[in-house]
Length: 201
Image (cartoon, rainbow, N blue to C red; front, side, top):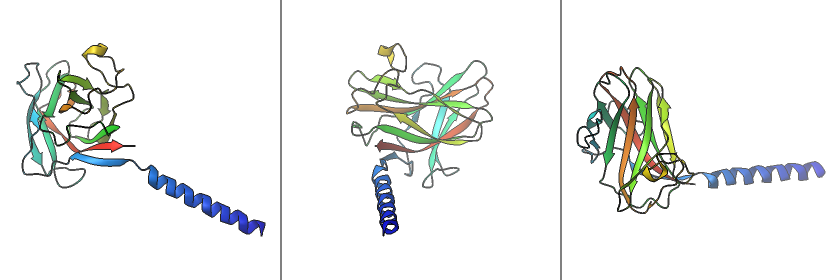
């Protein structure tokens, strides 16, 4: 009898754990999967007059982490030092991301070297730029990048560009940008981004 009770208790415990795991799964909403016939994203190129190395963007079926398309982000040669290549949109279907805890996106690095990538969110009437810590993407690899919005890991001008801030004015999102940092000697080429999602824990 005791053995039967113990087995029953184990079955109930296992069922509770499985149920808890199901309910603990984060909720995600897709911000964009780049599946349309056109895109509102842009390459910074020369428009911000800051030496950005991005040149153009296009929707591409050459690679995708979900669906059939991604955003192909083209950049020019990096002859010396490091160069940033930035791609952004100000046409947002989700101008209020305050219900969400994190954003995530997939990156495919087709270059011959390690690149770094960061997410930048511009919010509020003052267009405050909040930037995440850069993440290394080795040559030829694909990674899912997750950016926490409220764990004191973002930087802005008013933190002296130290990663100590939570996202502010998240109910007034003005711009989403993905910024790549390319090492010296990188030849003109492209990287890909896909499946930008918003996450609620």
